[in-house]
Amino acid sequence: MPEDPEAWWSEGVLYQIYPRSYADSNGDGVGDLPGITQRLDHLSWLGVKGIWLDPITVSPNADWGYDVSDFCDVDPALGTLEDLDALVSEAAKRDLRVILDLVPNHTSIEHPWFIEARASRSNPKRDWYVWADPSEDGGPPNNWASSFGGPAWTLDETTGQYFLHNFLSEQPDLNWWNPEVRDEFDRILAFWFDRGVAGFRIDVVHMVIKDAQLRDNPPVEDGDHWFIKMRGQRQFYNSCRPEVHDVIKRWRKIADSYTPKRVLIGETHVFDTEMLASFYGDDDELNLGFNFLMIHAPLSAEALGKIIEDTDAAIPPGSAPVWTGGNHDNYRFPSRWAEGDADRARAALVMLLTLRGSVFLYYGDEIGMPDTEVPLEQILDPVGIRMYPVFGRDPERTPMQWSADPGFGFTEPGVEPWLPFGDAASFNVADQVGDADSFLTLTRDLIALRDAESDLRSGAFTRIAAPVGILAYRRGDGFLIAASLDEGAGGVISGVNGEVAASARRFRDGEQIDGDLTLEPGDALIVRLALSRQPL
Ligand code: NOJ
Image 1 (spheres, rainbow, N blue to C red):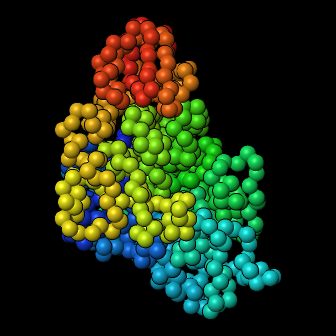
Image 2 (cartoon, rainbow, N blue to C red; image 1 turned 120 degrees about the vertical axis):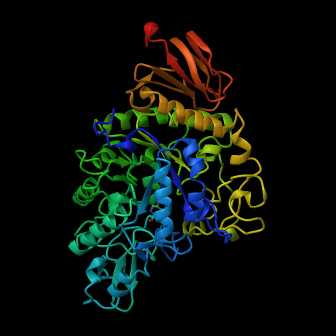
Image 3 (cartoon, rainbow, N blue to C red; image 1 turned 90 degrees about the vertical axis):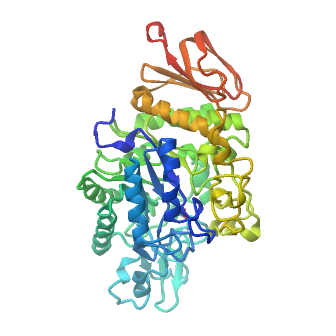
């Protein structure tokens, strides 16, 4: 059980929306806030508890909303503040909470603060950003690399100093050592909380504080995670600094001062579970921290089983882990994990929706939406352009597929969407909604089962030995879940007595299990255990 009865986020299913791609209410090819409001009935029917919207604040869109030029207004392409108010109030009528994205690490280069800051070395806003003199050879002040590749520093010719940007050069990093920056963000948090926003997902929360001495980052080592190796250096001095916890504690005090309490969810893009757990503090920092180890692992019982066990053990008692199969920065799980194999995608969904903690679905996950291939000339993601054809983020950002009609229910017929449509004829809500065997029906049924069964919501996670390629675990005393995750994995788990409460491929629903639980490749079963005959 969550220790805090107000912690509605700790065991339910939440849903991430990429606003430009959800529903276009005004026929301009771009999704918007009124479009989301019009689709709230879908979300309440699905059974999710709340939605997180990727940034809706004003942005010149060098990084599609993650370069903010006004933190307290809605981007005109997405709507108005009044549209947000309407969304929050319509959502509340359906018992849905609205969580926004907060981007405190950096601003847009077009933000008035930065325009002032770069005007002169003596400008009062100068110290709101991270500036440093060139190194002796005239190059960048240290070796920090941008997370998007290339140096993390750009020389400002006018004032002769470099400014720091851990992402694009259009995204200068704020200086969180400056108390004025902290005060300003206190006001920004309150601005949105006062409007009834239920919380924030905080962009690269672990990065906001940088080493005060700007020391060089160390090189990668043999045992490092593949993602760190890909970056070419350990982000030791520009990430996860001890002082970041003070900033998060400060935000938590603000969030907790509201009734009901607001939730803080971190984009904790770190690679060990102890570090992840540290961001929960002593229940005085983040309420939830995304677990990227899962996203960056293959769909393998061995790899995911270890990550889930380690995370479950590391997250402090009373706090909840977060599970997600994908988001706007990573390929969709039916493509990335299951490589188009529908059964494996279903098995992955069963796993996600039966883990302890909070589960985030990414829009389209409920219909098993795969990635959309976006041709080079249509790529809009700056990272996709830089890294073509190796990596890009447009494939998972294409419009939601509501129906097979012209415009696919996303926009009006004949309107060109901002990113190309995917295979909406094969994957859409309208076709799946009344189909008992569809991915959508499975998603909804799994959410309903989780809602109805306290063991599936909050029961302890206990891993169980299983044949190779099968991940098996108990939730509380009442349920055993066994999922064939690796390609072709099957086998028998002995000593199981009960009834199949839900199965990935549906035809096993209701099956009685009397001793041997047999899994074929692609099976994922949730067994309601007969408690009196329960040896496991
Ligand atoms: C993480 C966000 O999820 C990503 O989309 C963005 O590009 C970077 N942070 C920079 O804000």
